[in-house]
Image 1 (tube, rainbow, N blue to C red):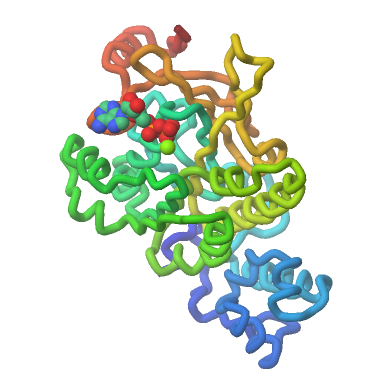
Image 2 (tube, rainbow, N blue to C red; image 1 turned 90 degrees about the vertical axis):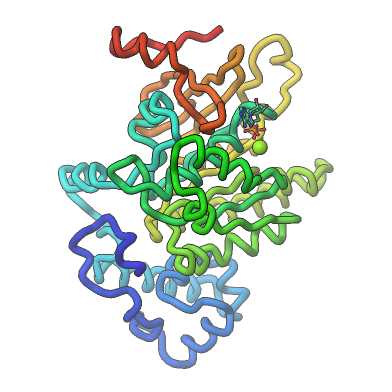
Length: 350
Ligand SMILES: Nc1ncnc2c1ncn2[C@@H]1O[C@H](COP(=O)(O)OP(=O)(O)O)[C@@H](O)[C@H]1O
Ligand SMILES: [Mg+2]
């Protein structure tokens, strides 16, 4: 089941057959300690953080790090994750065969060069009402679609920190698109999260949920909302950033090792100095900026929405317009038809 998730067709070892004890340097005693700490598989160990593992199994940070690296080495040797060094042509070939999930809007997909990507964290940030949760709802519908229709033929894990997930909206989007809503609703595992510790705990065990639900897309709507609300005073800022940091690093490792697409949403920070301009600053500071692979800024633009690529290792800085309607995130009609006439036309900001 897990093997299907890999983009590397040559992955020849069944992950299910890999046991903790197959890892170099791990004997029955350590394996038991790991299992008692909730680390049940080689993949779980490979995505663990050395600081947390050291505490969980009562070992030094160095030995925890050694175990994690040995687990990653076993996954590499078994061709479950990529080798440490690849030639760039093979890297390119692998990137081309990567799964991408449509956002529901073709122009938004084009902006993302094909949709939301696996092995990456895509962050949508913007003000309240800018369309972040609507994109998340639409992704729940598109992800279930066959790969040739822009989907990933997969289940979705939806982590809702703001209490804004609405199954009715998913149903509406599916119906408006003429899709099997019952089947789609069954393949979304929703978790409503109540506080920052709960969120951290869910993320700690995310690998297990990804396998259980056979999900290739994980959505975390409101990645820092809870941390932001709970750590309000300045005195606790360092603590908050440190906890966010370890959570976000775990998310990136999960995306890479489990070969899943992760979508997170974030708020904008109100910056008084940009009162008359556009407060394009995402909340969370540098920690978040460094942990998202792609960052997309969303804002209202008249009746429609504007999306801008703010930070990406390979997307050009560009923007596009889309709309939100009963189909979820969707193309603006006039724009798609004028685009057909004049290919490559740029979106204009109004
Ligand atoms: N069924 C719908 N049809 C059309 N537009 C909708 C629908 N549901 C929500 N919207 C639009 O989406 C907006 C909310 O966007 P949302 O993604 O929830 O914001 P946020 O960025 O805060 O998550 C609403 O203000 C409305 O304009
Ligand atoms: Mg929202």
